[in-house]
Picture 1 (cartoon, helix red, strand yellow):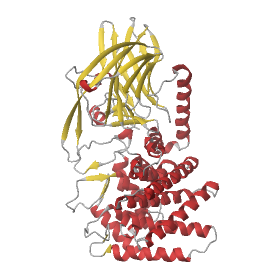
Picture 2 (cartoon, one colour; picture 1 turned 180 degrees about the vertical axis):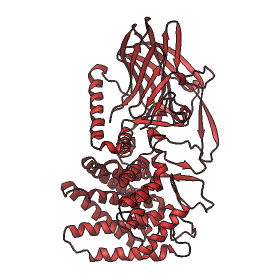
Picture 3 (tube, helix red, strand yellow; picture 1 turned 60 degrees about the vertical axis):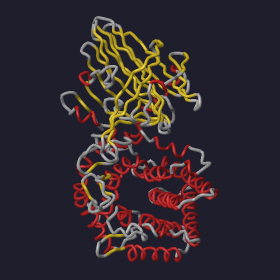
Length: 597
């Protein structure tokens, strides 16, 4: 994972990096590699998509000097922090600052399935003078990109043991708790004005956002000469006991990291780092924790990516118990979404297509699981679910809703689902002639109706007259069961290589299309490499050839998102802003790496 060291690494590169941690449910932080909030989606404490705490900065008074360890672009002040940074270790979420006679580390810790953020400082005072350490929180309450000015930042606060409670919203009943184990809290109502954030939109236009931040008070502590002291600050949305709860949570977190690290051989340290990365911000589980009263309140597209992530996240590294628990959990959520949709008066074509995608991607990932584990009670539950879903789609087809035969991604997944169903029936010694026959008809549709011989492509939709190559073609040769004929698959792979492939990912549409915007996506590379290995056979020689296709992408590990891979790149090498992490992309890079070792 990414490590920066003064006078060794390029500081300008580190400034551009994105860094994230989460509690694996709904609370996270998003900053750059130096723990700065420089983008309009950055924040030290973000809960359910709302930034509640922008940052906590430090002020140190030592030997009649005052150090402000922060970097803000604002009308109030501008402070330089980079000269103080000695090293950065994003794997451990830790920065070390060197102020000559005082050295301190700052480590960020999120506790799994808990909304408490711990900021741990280890401070070494090397001088013969007492040092005064002050921690200054900068508070806001806003959606991502929705900047606020001072007039709209009116919060109430009251003291609690070891800190304060801020009521950010009476309407939403949102509170922010700030505490410290060995600092004194001093109230002071202040504002920090016109803090500047920079962003680049989808059209690559640079925009500057300005906001005001609220300072409710300061935490102060003293460090005696020639001593080392640990000081911790805590941020949460509910009150908690500092002494009784935190040490146990920290020990549990460290044990978790050790368990993951020990499960992967040391020579595969890049994979080890990516697995730790996934564990650090699996916050997209938020989708599965929402009670499903109305399918419109569920981000189905987000849930599809979460389910697709399960293979790289758990199955690839043999974390089968966790994979099984997730599959059972998501099975219930899918049924809830479907029931809610059936009860809804308004259902669009997009709703039906997304539900089909959700079910069919679930079947693909479930198949990857059942191919690797021995049969058990949970496997039986998953088997029955797959059988029921296939039969329901067959019934849906009779009512005229045959989208799974019209769109390329869907029909590739549908053929795959039929073959998974056939495998389950065969495993249970049941006749599967009818399913085999249906699957062969689907295969003929793909290789005849979708196939365009003159262009050597598959149409993205039977309704579409657009005959450009699209990334959906990859699914015809990269899923568990290949639907494209051998003759067509060779041509498909060649077309993808010529029109979609780049060393950093695949384009979603041909570079020859007027709709191509220059974006390329690493998340498709695992499918691309799998398709190549399927055509050539898996040997050390073919793995080496495949590695050369993705070598530059693999070398990106340790350079950007938490030391991982960015969600998207621009072909012209332009920096893309946006939401700074993507669980599915990182999971697919884990899967890709596993194919090559």
